[in-house]
Image (cartoon, rainbow, N blue to C red; front, side, top):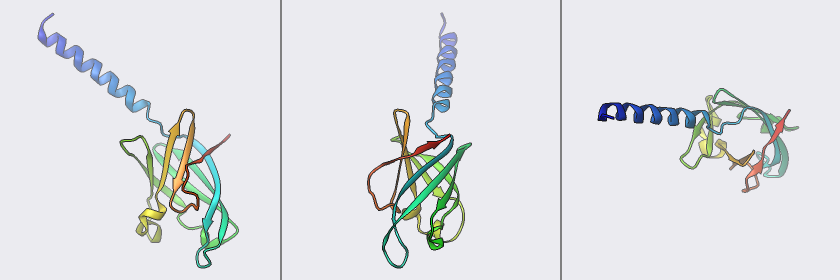
Length: 135
């Protein structure tokens, strides 16, 4: 086998493996939810809040469920980027306070086995919380 044929085979195999890697990215799809505690604006009291996520086509959409309308900020579209350690980083795509206060409004998602976990500085808990799939 000459070197040119061998090089073509290597390029084809490499391209195929790259394609498989792209297809195997661990992006969630569909609806997920987590309920956790957050610090209430102004009073710093701890309140429960439900975070509903919808993942589709490499984007995430967040809806907040709370009795306090002041806490329902940063709803909307989030961009998704993947860090080297396979943690997904969600950042608010709109304008205003949510875009300006990047650290507190950044959401992290990781997959362990068949489950997704979420973490944010907005949450009172510093632990990774399980995202529940909504069917």
